[in-house]
Length: 119
Image (cartoon, rainbow, N blue to C red; front, side):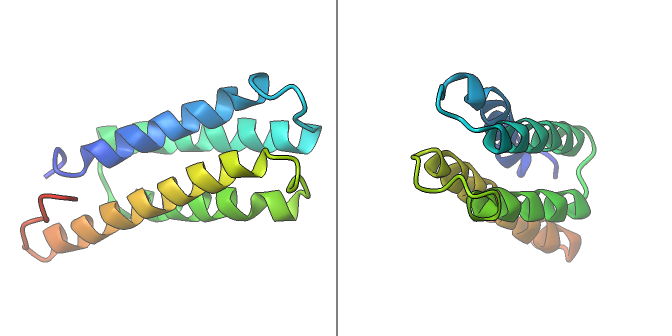
């Protein structure tokens, strides 16, 4: 049961690590981008490691919300228009979609259905 959904958590972990280290790759990153990337990166790292160890569907709902936050945070913190927003759009979109896949396969497993091989 865990192995069928584990690959999404590894990709979310990679996205969290990338968000955490990304401010060092962008010399023009404003402070609000840097802090958002650090904090959200840490949250994604923690929840993906937690999900790898003990899989619960509620953990995926949390990463889904975090993915949505990452996607909209360039508008909330006003760092759109300088190119850095694409980093958040891509990572946020991927985390959101991967979490949806995890949630969908978790619900199917909970109701006794086999997960789809693509998920």
